[in-house]
Amino acid sequence: MKIFTSSWSTPMPESIVRIGISRGTPRNQSGYKMLPALAPGPWFKTASPKVFEELYREQLAGLDPEFTVARIRAISEGRDAALLCWEDPNIAADWCHRGMVSEWLQQTLGIEVYEYGLEQCGCGLSHPKLYRAELVD
Image (tube, one colour):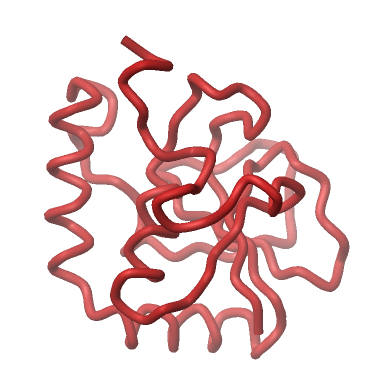
């Protein structure tokens, strides 16, 4: 099983199970699953980027990464999975918590989680959706 990150708006082959890690879900889309444990907390719309990053990293630190991957495997029935949120993968300034998920899984379990379609950009600390102040501020 491979794990990717991506946007709700990115077309996916049917072989990849779409798993939402956002607080909301898109209208007029079906066939996806949800993993609420990886959705950001209720502060997600009001926190500054720096505070968001601190709070989300605290949230991830409270999770068991092995259990989280086991949940992804169970939800996807062992098939490849994409963890989805809203931010556009092609807009560098649109950072997203899914980059932090990639970093967390690489640092804790050595699992490489790439942005679907942007694999050449890297994963973990090189994930294209990680917050980078020089692109946003």
